Image (cartoon, rainbow over all chains, first blue to last red; front, side):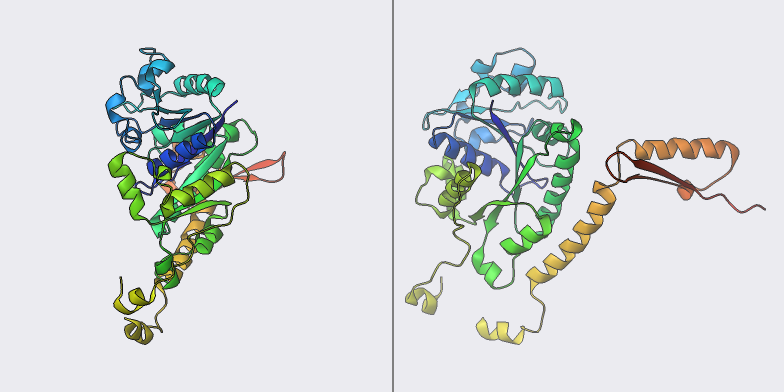
Length: 269
Length: 87
């Protein structure tokens, strides 16, 4: 049985796809057989972030409709063993995903994978509800910014009421907070909500803090998940978060401003 | 910049304003959205209003309906109808 994890946020543009790609890739690097499923029907982007956009032949909706089998649609990553991507369809039919169809595909994936990462679309419509419905765990991606925190709280409410676990009265979906685009210098100046502030408001366990980093844009430009950039702060922060996801205790890094050298102190930069 | 910051230090930091605003709105939305009961409540409220209107002319907001969970095996459906004063 696979662990089904939804990466969600409510608000768009906070880093769901970047995080799905990084976490999925990182889990596969640890030797876990992992598939990342793009639920953003009509606006797929996981393929681009993973650098496999030219290898998409069949997609999630084709599999649901029986136009292709799962193995035809799964794209095997060429860099990391045991990593697969199931791309979303570019159809405009917003009801292309059905609960039965999604369940069938997830059941089949569950037989061959250790982890299923569901990359949710923004919003609280059909696609987002489908992405979270079957989840055992949720990673709520949040920026230290008012609208993102508020939307994350909404999504937590939906996880607690609209997921399969909620409807069937099972153990609740396990909630994890992933704070992204964190800028320690701005926090220290009092211009940005701190980790503690966001934790206090959302009141869920903290999985990771990803610093605002140039490496993230570079990674998406190249189509290489940021964890493959091992030198980068963001890549390392994601690897820490993945280790925590697997039950390890890891100290939080990148929460304070990097020490500036004497020249930078004087001349700025 | 440090000197400017010094003169501005009496102002509340933006982050703490953000935190206060969030705490208020999130608490409010949790109480109204998260615990507002099952999805059928709005429909139920509309139907009850329609039935009452067959007999009495009442306002849109004359019917107030709430579901309270009191313990594991007791839910109370509370229905409040404000009737207009007799003329």
